[in-house]
Image (cartoon, rainbow, N blue to C red):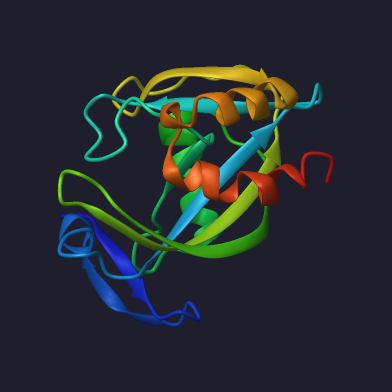
Length: 171
């Protein structure tokens, strides 16, 4: 049974709860992370969430995202999930954090204190098909145009954090 870390609005740890339970009944605020990977051509690596995901299935999103486990640091969790989901690892730096809340049609709610990490990578990706339905490198200008024209194809948190994350493309 996987657990998430419950936090207050200042990211102070309050305890832990089973992951699905923390996402039900309006969702309890918990710690999460999002990883954005860019390459030397200025492209961003996106993944399409697997069909089996408990929410936002088959939507395009950032390179990877998840929750740290109790006792696991954010950076350890980012590296773990980047390897598990996308099949590679690289240097990552935390750039900002934000809180978002969204309710999904299936009764699941995201209520997350999301820490955003950015990295650069130019190698090959080998995503886990249980986690990732598809993936692609996309030019940032093309991506920004598509997300504006087709917002329904993208995850809520990606749209919420994208502007801030793109500031770090050259950092």
